[in-house]
Length: 173
Image 1 (cartoon, rainbow, N blue to C red):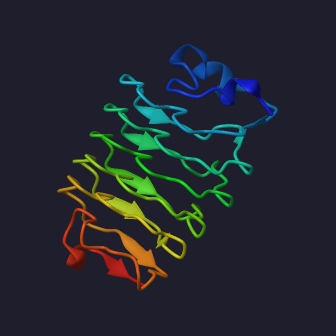
Image 2 (image 1 turned 180 degrees about the vertical axis):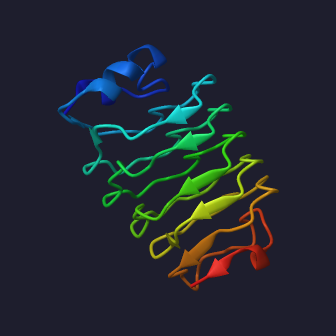
């Protein structure tokens, strides 16, 4: 496990080290990716990375406050153990599209503020599995341009009234 992923706080991968991680041939095995790319105001694109996240449970704030982030490749993320995704894309104001087709959210309990403030977000591709979710407060608040998002396996006990957008804008599967 790469020790650079084990400290708490923001700036898990400082922008100065980002190129080093992009060029690695052998995968970095991460134990914690919370805040990994948080507060990188100049970061516009996150490409496919060679980081193994199969042991990670906390994906909270991973890209939060990356106000210039336009495009993110999530195909490298293994979220099979994920339980926490709160504020994952919090205030990613420039983000227009997110591909969740390969993102496993079936064990995630907390999704509050996940896309809060993503004012240019239009499409969340794929279907978000809500099987274990207990909190979606403000998940889509201030996503005024959101045209498409789909949920499946929504628990009867999950309160969607405070999700942040009108429920008629959500496709339920």
